[in-house]
Length: 169
Image: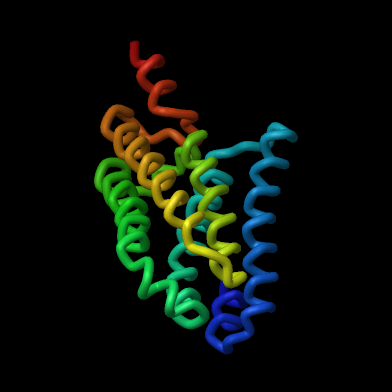
């Protein structure tokens, strides 16, 4: 992300976009490879969550530098996305003292949709995909808050709220 930030700050939009795509693809690949090889660990889940958080935090200044018109026009959606991320993070830290690292199915789909919409935005495309991604993010983060409310102790890689509720019965 430091390289991505430097490219964005310098206005090198093509280099920025290439690095961003590489970052997003490698994030998907490392999780897929870990699952296929049976190498999923709590440490890996935690590192992935921190990497995702740093990526999304870094994208806001990048958007301000490279796509200020997008930031102005979509500020309400950006606030919804930011709040959707920050509230579950705060709740997780209050309850468990760490990032939740659930990686639910819905959160995975939401991250893919958001990642694709971000690439479209930085490539100069339309914003409607970001608005759709906002809905997915909102739903995924509501599920995360619900999981945190129900789950008595921290656990990484929780597939869904339904999974937690069924195990509790």
